[in-house]
Length: 392
Image 1 (tube, helix red, strand yellow):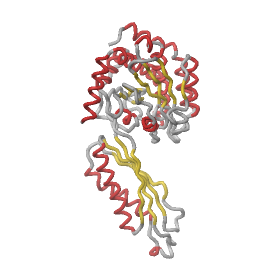
Image 2 (cartoon, rainbow, N blue to C red):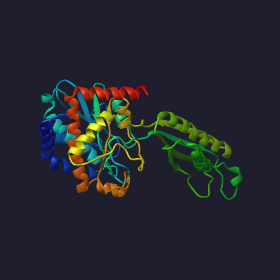
Image 3 (tube, one colour):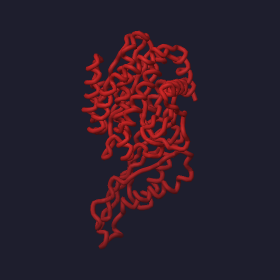
Image 4 (cartoon, rainbow, N blue to C red):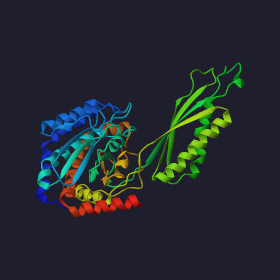
């Protein structure tokens, strides 16, 4: 555990930046930008870091809206990750504005002590978490090559420090049939839309064979052009999710078979485009437990996970396959009041309670990162846990 003096110093820096961090969170919330187009959000982060003497690299890792700010010259290296992309139509209903401001707050505090602690800290701005996989692209660019540990926090309706996330796979099916007049000669047509809808019905029939925690959900992108024409073309997308990559692959194959069977039944063609999504989160328990301890010392008690609530997916999972990592969740509303991707959650993400939780998260991350820098035993424990989970 770090000394109370160091903890208080980190807290004091964050408290001194409270107004600016609130302003950053509100600005990003009020100007939502979609994946890879977060130009204003990333510029505001650069501006705030530069204001406090921390020059920031942007673009970073080959991405226009990614960024990196660094402190410390040598020694163990901890990365604090910021997200700032929004969702279509419902804006910051996932609270990424708070994630960004919390990460900046933790970094600015750590930057004041990095040299003193004999370590390095990097703020990594990661665009396009909502389906774009910005962290994956940064991993491929080598952005985490010499990082010893990585962390971020996520808003939620309860406090959890090691909640699982689901691995994902995206599929797009394009059905091509034969058009015909829907009243004069429907028998001459082959409906792409019928095959598309049958795919959903076949997938539903297979759910009894899915393991617990598997999620398969989709929507129809294109279902035809006019009511009096047998649809020649139809397109649907599915997301397949699972707690592990093995089950993910098994269910993906089932969904693809459903699409091919539906196409055969309607005498249409189908082409399937697939894209690997995100890996499941490998929460590093030694790090998560230290975060929980620091959170408790700040007045909030958290559990590791809660089976009563579901989970989504994040490209932080891919980071956790590369380096020891944590992705704790902190409440910005009452339990059950709202969950991610709901309009009410977007309101909570700019509420006073949401902003207070962001400041708390910044302090807990700063303390946890500082402990990683000064405690070689914690780093060894985190690395041993990571190696064991990777081998498993």
